[in-house]
Length: 142
Ligand SMILES: [Zn+2]
Image 1 (spheres, protein in one colour):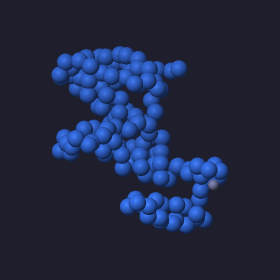
Image 2 (cartoon, rainbow, N blue to C red; image 1 turned 135 degrees about the vertical axis):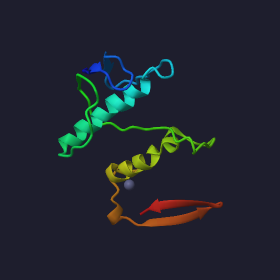
Image 3 (cartoon, rainbow, N blue to C red; image 1 turned 90 degrees about the horizontal axis):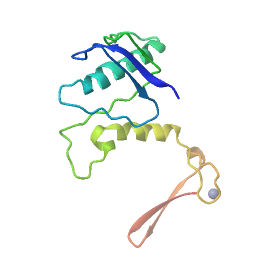
Image 4 (tube, rainbow, N blue to C red; image 1 turned 90 degrees about the vertical axis):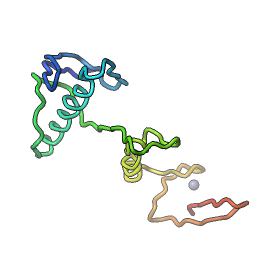
């Protein structure tokens, strides 16, 4: 497995930091307030992911962070906390607004199969039928 390799990060208050981060793992940055955790995650790694991704599809405009180099990045999604949306029923998905994006991805790329015969269900060739049972509605695709 390859690691993300960061060499000579000098963005913000970072003092020529070099490190390797394992890919496909949950990685947590901890440290004192103001020590540069967000700068490293957002202003260096995420910004460079965006820059490389946009450059790959022919767009430019994001400045390269102050680094010697970063290797082995992939396109990335940044989720941030939305402080104004505090609700006891909030989830990571609703709090960060990524829920709506993920729902669209699954809607466009998802494949539904019949739970009885495993045949792929196509929206264009089926009709829905609603049945009311003991106050509950059940929707059937026929
Ligand atoms: Zn079936």
